[in-house]
Image (cartoon, rainbow, N blue to C red; front, side):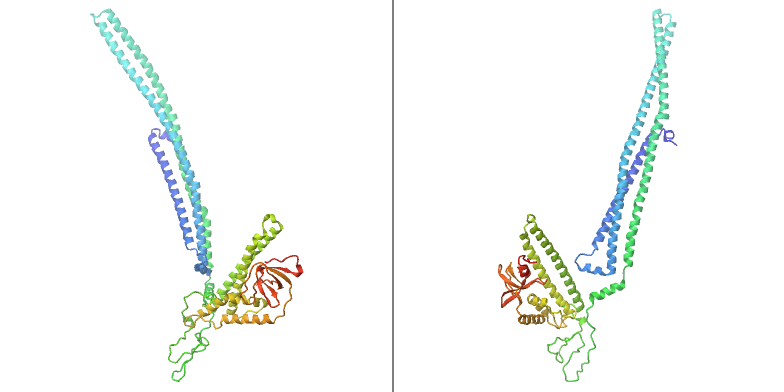
Length: 554
């Protein structure tokens, strides 16, 4: 089957058909292009959807994701993000392997088609020219034959007429011979032209047109094969991502199977457990007896010690704790508005956060110290004195964080039912601790109300801190005077406004009676009766055992 032999006379139809084939290919390219856009938009929408439902950082919503069901949902969001990525892969592969390739092929196809049909039109024009030449030769031969016949008839007429002169007859005869010769020449030319045309026509229909149509047929068949291969690629691009999409779906199933309802129930207990015991039975109050009403000691709503008892017939303020309305004001620093168990967790979390900050500042201090040592050994790299201010600032931050940590640890110990041991270090800090926390603890104590307001603690932290400060004073007065172990120079002015501390002026020389034991304080003496603690970062210490090498502040 060949278009050259079967469709030798269908040049125009083949031209229309091949143009239709290119249109089909371009339509398929447009289809794939729109599919890639859909995949990209779908992937974008999936990513936006996953991002929309991701928990916001440092928000209450993030805390909810400790539950296994929420963790599974978070895993689902992450898997959907990967799922969206596979649709982006589909779009990219279809664009590179189909759209771009076919667009380049269409341009080549159009150029090849144009060349083939240009050759076909050129062959058509040539055969049409030959046909016109044949027609012209034929008409000339016909005309010459007619002219020769008329000349012959005219000669015969003149020859038969006795009145015509012999000269006229001879002239007519010569004219007839000339016309006859012209007819013979036209005949020979017509015969030659006809033979040449037949040869050209045979070559046109048996050689030129078949070859051209064969090229067009091969071009069209290549187009058909190419579009088939593109369709296979189209399916293969989808098939390549199926295993990865399957893994995404498997991840969602695995996340769903990891949900543990018992674990979530336990987390609810840990989140909302108050630590209180259920209220006991309320005693019967016999109003037939002339006595004052009393509130059951077993009730959680017992009035605060020291408050007057409720009078008979008055409005009862005793309520069970679970039904108490909580204050909606600002949260106290010690979380005293929370039930014991929840307060313990909040305090523990605060202590952990402060310890992390202390570690961060300590690492920064160590790094600055090492840099200063490098500058001391290699002055060309930098000025060691330029780091002093930063080092002092970091050291002061560490001291503030340590005081803050000790404050929250004291509250935590109180909630856990244990009081901190009064070590030498604790006594040393008690003055500073009392001064910085007195106001906060007083405010917290004022915020605590009776059971009809919010949760109330029985002990007063302010009173406890004052007792600790008194213990510190007593012990300090009973101590034997300590011998000096070195001297120190005040680098900065320090106003010791809290108990146990001493004020120093920048540049002042004093005696060291106890070096820093890791708590950031050094014990010094100005005279026999005036001694106390100063921050180690405010002085430069010279110990007697190493008088030549100064121990610089940390």
